[in-house]
Length: 315
Image (cartoon, rainbow, N blue to C red):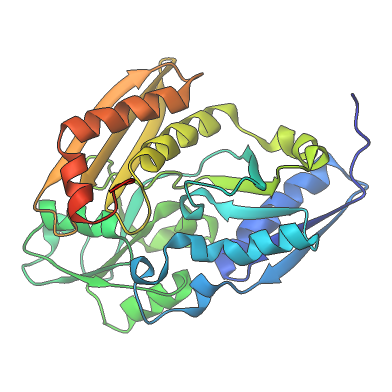
């Protein structure tokens, strides 16, 4: 059935500069698709934006960045919410649905420093700031001589703390820097072999109420099939292993020569033990491959690591 084009779409978004860029980007795409539609932004401050004195893992995880936006969907004050996919909880409540995942920006991590061009250049005791247990565990494993310190705040705040000399270098998602026109701050884009990305990193997702078939139809043209397959595979790994920012876990998928290549790891935060695995499969069944990789990680010791962290589902 042909649905009439939308007359008005309201986008719920966090009010950080990066989140606003993401929402504006989706708004511009929707305005091109539906020139007669009024597309409005509904800016909100989430608990994840407000709590800056403690690591996310200690206060409830990345779901703190989406809860208020989901409330806006439930209350009808917004039609869609735009998220960085790495901030979206792996288990969405039944009321919500991811109706589109857009094309992916570079999904890798970046090193930002005014002193050093690479992690290899950094001397023992140099301080690296990161908000991510995933990054922290990989740093500890590969560069045990470096000091890793917690870094919170939005992207501009993190860069300011670096510029003030609180850190010798910081690690950020390359995508956020690129999207805000700050690509010149990147000293090195870290290959996945050095810092395997988070599930969904670099991709934007659009969330709506599961009952809004009209919204799902309107958003369908924004879905990128290849990116969606990769992100769905990554999220399946993380979901199967109770993935959250309380667990040092990475998952990264690429489609190469028609095959979906999926890599993943689970680690102790101090990097003293890492379970890693890789496999290839059919990109049309990404969740199946994700579950297979999760099983392979368990066989490599992921279950024991997760049990130690008290995060294994059913434990």
